[in-house]
Length: 162
Picture (cartoon, rainbow, N blue to C red):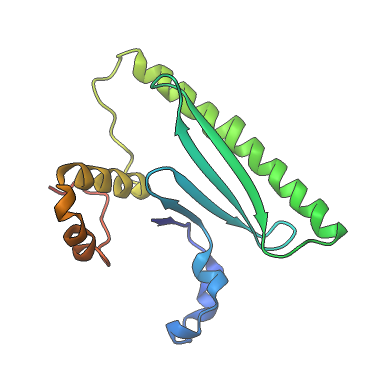
């Protein structure tokens, strides 16, 4: 699954045939590989990615994340410094924004103040992910190849589908 925001640079390719679009334009964004891998692309210091693996912790409210920062080519000195700056920024965003928010949400969920949580309509990636989890859990192992074949090009909307 790929999650990407609007990118005005893509307008440059509107008159090109899709097979002529550059790979980098098509592979940017954040990719999720079910069930626990995230690959986020960046340009700090040269084309690079942050590869994250998320593992369950000892309790439902904990987890362990292992992150690798990888660059397409060996950087020179200036690119190394730019990459280090990019990676420090990413570490801050993940630790102080994303995970701090998640920990507050987990604490709120554990309080029992709400009987359920509804993802926002703008969180299409979350809807898509959870729809796939539901489908996978409902599907017998022997039927998984047919499920994958059926959904090769299916895009789920934010609306709940049965």
